Image (tube, rainbow, N blue to C red; front, side):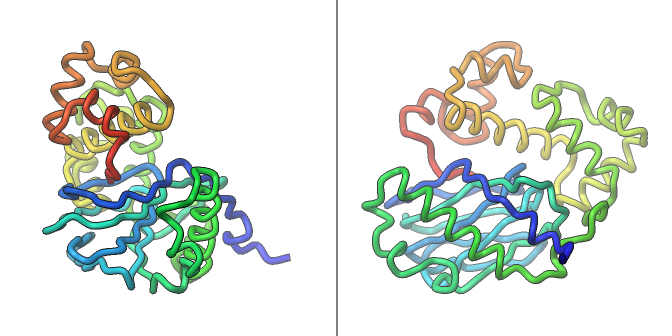
Length: 259
């Protein structure tokens, strides 16, 4: 029996939606703890990572592994199909955006009916799309167990934050917990994500905020408490500075497809 990591893929769809018109998509140096799949049915948007820019079109779909730094932008509204998912096993994978011909991962029946699918049908469609995309990933992008792109100090820091999303310490505190110096920690974060530790921590905390508000039905106060904010007012202020809208507005709108 083969020991290929692909045999251990088991997809859990966390969130998927088809948005007929995304009014804005301007995020800088994002990175997420989950996998992402994006397909735009209209031109006008782009995504970049590690200095490489992909102009998104109906012919192109992209797959983004966890902890991959990326930025997005758009010069006009566009129809957007997105999937947030995780794998049963934490398989080490290169933190690089993968692009595919959309027709190779999205069956015609799915593409034609996204706007009319029920929530259950959309989840089934998302599972089919994600599995098709994973099968197209080159085997060499799946690293042997124990190997990760970048230094293990970064991965240790990620595990610490994953265990405690409400972490309120500074860079020095995190460096001490990782058993390294501040300078070394900063270097490894810049190498792995392209952003400083402070920026990465804010990105991660806002990602958790979106997950708690939209996927786990936390209240604004519960989310603020869970993420270590002094109160809901401080949390709302930081959230609005980051996303441009308050948490209450975000929830009322049903969420927007955020990185």
